[in-house]
Picture: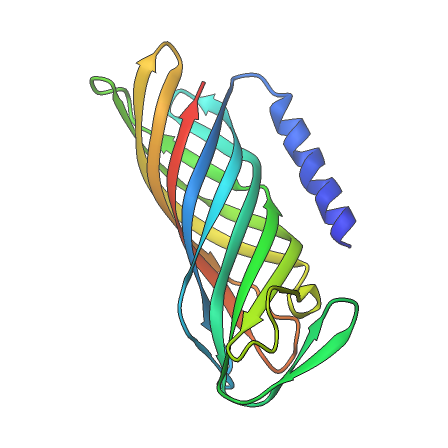
Length: 218
């Protein structure tokens, strides 16, 4: 399933890049991410710092409107406090039993392709203002975790995290023209995960994050 999702994402990206009226760019964003628990057995216990970087592709179907996509590598995570004893699966199926009131810090790497609509103002001086709204499908390519007490430390916990995640996002920012079609880009985006990230039926949580856009468009 994971390989199929990656192939679909790459095919979508290739088709979009093949279109005319394209504008391309790159970005690297600091990210602050946290869990949003949906069951009473777990609690949010802090946010984690990560990154979101990759390519941006904009297809303009009107002067001030564009479909936006790209290809991103994203590291997200958060801390979860388990109120009860929990069995964590690591590596190739090994089990570690953690006592109640243990906090587990997760780091999850995703390959993702955003699908968004961009609304852009006319240039005012050297500045252009924009807003974006869209969806972010993500494929899990690696998950690690550490726990208080040291029972697990940067262990592979991919079996604890679902292979696919989906969020919707909105945000906006500015572009500063530095010559021709080249612009520096800044912005801020909020992403709200609406699928469950944890694979265990007993524990449910979404993954939310805030990213600060730092990029350049050509």
